[in-house]
Image (cartoon, rainbow over all chains, first blue to last red; front, side, top):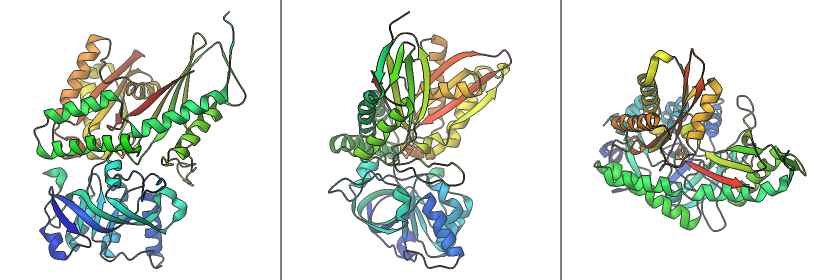
Amino acid sequence: MRKLKLPLSPEERRSLRAGEGVLLSGRIYTARDAAHKRLHEMLERGEPLPFDLQDACIYYVGPTPAKEGQAIGSAGPTTSSRMDPYTPELIENGMQAMIGKGRRSDAVKQAIVSRGAVYFVTVGGAGALLSRCIQKRRMIAFEDLLAEAVTELTVEDFPCYVGIDTFGNDIYDL
Amino acid sequence: MGKIREINVSELVPPIREACGTMAVQYSCDILEAMRRGREAEENERARSVLDLLLENAGIAERERIPICQDTGMIIAFARIGQDVHFSGGSFTEAVCEGVRQGYREYYLRASVVDDPLYDRINTRDNTPAVIHTEITEGDGVEITLMAKGFGSENKSAVAMLTPADGEQGIVDFVVDTVRKAGPNACPPLIIGVGIGGTFESCALLSKKALLRSLNESNPDARYAALEDRLLQEVNATGIGPQGLRGKTTALKVQIEQMPTHIAGMPCAVNICCHVCRHAKVVL
Ligand code: SF4
């Protein structure tokens, strides 16, 4: 599996092909349903977001609580399509990568292609294994949303497949 | 008349708490075996690597007591209560919820329930309430089967009010179509519960109960057992594969439960479950 360090350069993103296995290291943010709704509302009101979207990678995950001594609990992907209504806007605002599971809408695919972003998929129901690739977790915003809060993760060799590449090829259509 | 058996509802709490903790970190043997068999039968390299990851995950989860999946589900309790039982010391429903509450807190499981489905959607913070189905049985036994259902797969379930003329082919088409629509989102490999007959709501319930049966057991009626096999073949022939990344292990098993129905109808429900099909039985 190819090792990649986040954030990815435009050239690195263009070199990725749907279906290829990768190991991601670096910084990613967690956000799922309720957090996306709030980010959208903040953008609509013209407010600054709680983290810098420029070149950000968002992981659709709502982990289980961490026990003493753990960075995070079980932390596998949730279904990405629920985030589709909000995703093109986030890509327009600089987000360069997403991690989740499942198909995306045509609108998301178009945004990925037009901005050279990339969608990674990882394995649903492998949250215990994936949690081991997460070294650190820091609260960023929306703590009241519990598992749905926005947090910053530091990951190392986090296993994914390229889901949709910058050319719009889709792993689920291969 | 049998003697009334008195049960203090507080007795329900510890076994339900423990069951919640165990279900989250441990696959049942039948599912693990089915995944291993699927792994051996796969020819697609990516499918094999996905199943390897899931099996590795299963080992880590059990050894380190980390939930198999972060969606530790909403609890459904199927309670079979003997008619000679009298519950004392408080509310039965509240005691079941207290078991869930303690289990989810103590074992660091995810609170995934919101109070209002449409407007408020505020997390109740302790994964309660549980969905409770009660059935009155003869005698003085109490048996509660708990299920911790994830919603990636629950969201892909469906009911069709088929009619008698639709026949077996109607069932096959509906099941395969539902699996296709589920695609990768339901986290295949799947376990598929099918309820046939009854009414609109009872066939949905049957389809969920079908998920509770061991994967090593087929429907006792040979015709339905044969249909289970046919459905599994057809579902796996879609090529969706583990995680929707292609392969032949789209489902590990199809389980049918049937019941009498009306002369004009043949309701059919498909309850999709991912490989993390968590259930446990509590007997008092
Ligand atoms: S569908 Fe199952 S494996 Fe997938 S995220 Fe939900 S509970 Fe986990």
